[in-house]
Length: 146
Image (cartoon, rainbow, N blue to C red; front, side, top):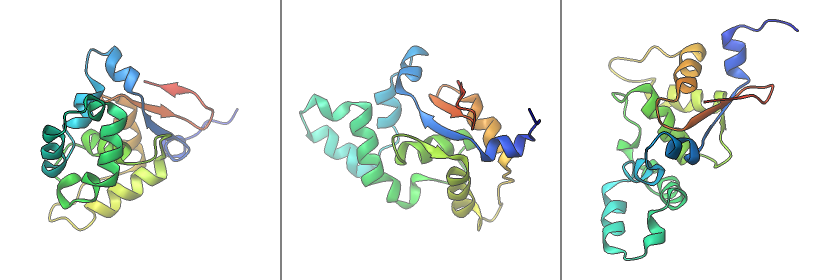
């Protein structure tokens, strides 16, 4: 089998959020997602008396529909892992390819006063570390890393 560079492995990878991994680490996946909702959606949530509104899946659906479209959702001064988590949270439930995550980061952070130094390797290493965010890395050979 041929040895691949880290950049090549990164480009063939996919990332997804696994709520059960978050729960297994002693954190609440629903609370982690709820904390990423915009002020308007949080206000609507407080007015609602339906407890099903507070599930991870429901928060994720509303983040994708509303919060992620607002200017402050993905800020250039936030840590890279937080940005990756937010991109995945607002993306498809089945996850996103590394190239898609990298493109969103590059597009959002390209024209900043102090541009971030992004590389395939850095994004891959940060995403693979998960940091309690429940991000799972799936490489092209279908192995999952926590």
